[in-house]
Image (cartoon, rainbow, N blue to C red; front, side, top):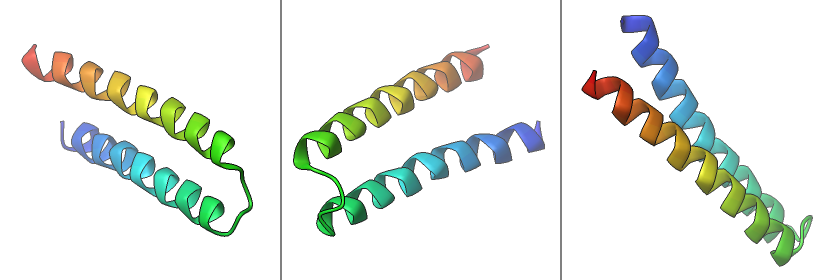
Amino acid sequence: MFFEKKNEDQILEGFEKTLKLLQERYEKKLITLEEFSKKCEELGKKKEKYLKKLEKKNRE
């Protein structure tokens, strides 16, 4: 169980790091606003799906 929790935390942390990297790339004009928005939306959907999966798992 301990390892699972650590892994869950690492995955959630990965979502946050990915978002920060996207923000940095946009601020440095390395990606367009359209690309930034698209990637953020995709990341948000993945995070939401993962959180739902975690919630379901924790209820069991």
